[in-house]
Amino acid sequence: MNDTLKSLDEFQDKLLTLIQSEQNRLGTITEDHLLYRDDIFNALALELLSLQQAANPYLAKQFEQASLNTQSLHHWKKIPGVPTQAFKLIDWSCIPENERSQVFYSSGTTGKDASRHWHHGRSLELYETLLSLWHREHAPWEGGMCRVDECLFLTPSKKSAPHSSLIHMFGTIADSLPPEVSSHFVGNISAQNEWILPLSATIDQLAKFSQPVCIFGTAFLFVHLLDHLEAAGTRLSLPEGSVVFETGGYKGKSRSLTKEKLYQEIESKLGILEKNILCEYGMSELSSQAYDLQSKSDSHFNNGSTTRRLKFPPWARCHVISPETMMEVPEGDTGLIQVIDLANVWSSVSILTEDIGIPHKEGFELLGRAEISEPRGCSLMSEDFA
Image (cartoon, rainbow, N blue to C red; front, top):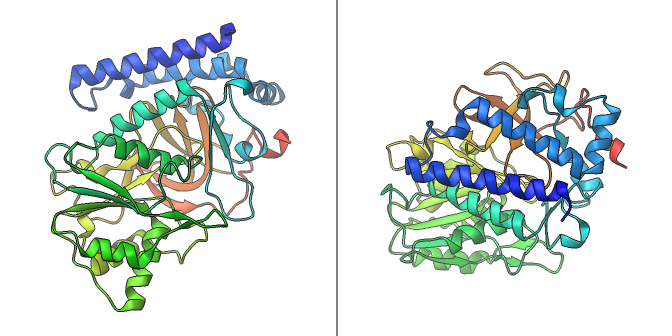
């Protein structure tokens, strides 16, 4: 292992030790967590950027062309975001090619090249550890918020779809469930490598539950389920206390609905109250996930509002910027979501997404996919990677 890779390895150990020691000190992730301090987060983000620049020739080239250097940035908000398009064009990774053991592909629209986020044993260790830690902070069966006896995943299993980061996340969650909670993956893979849901069998299984269940799925899989119920003229009334975990988008795989409409249909056709729906935001290029802030409220687990505000864990930040100027937009304005993710030790600490959001004092609101193809002011344009 060369010196740069050794330094990245040491950075991962330092980050994980800090997070775990804070968890032991606080017992939970609160605003007292040291990584919520801007000075500590800033120092780690700039340190990681410097290490990645030394390990990734593509990043070094882009900094050279843009006349940038890590010493002159001073603050994490100044770190240019690597566009998700870059992950489609090149293997954007600090992991040597001969050590890459796992790759997550984005589930983009059919016909477009998928993004590639490479992993190895060490990066997966960090990803799974921090994923489980942050999920436990929001899982409805933790902290006495409610009790479920079964977790039903509408997706295929990790074994069937090993290159999906979302399914890997679901598999990691399933593996960490309390022993009294069982889990089952009901989705399949089609001959065209599409996720499909055995609709009639799934509805039959849901109808048999007599105890609370948590249903995990993407927005488009829920729409397939809801449309099948509508076509059959059927309504389910799942046991009181049942929960929905909704993530992902539509990606042209179903009709698209607003959050408000989707949650209304879930309540109407599945019998699960809107206030019992938890939403999550993540992507294959990231190693951290943002959760619905309302899952931390004192009600069943939120107040039922469909204007959900999301928040990343203390080791990640959401930075909303103008696509014209690449400068931070004021609170309440609209811009592109950039994520600074310290858990992305082995790829890119800063990711410029294609999603639009609104920053708030606490968390951010996700509006959907940007209509523009590329931000005009970005110094790391994807065509430069070809």
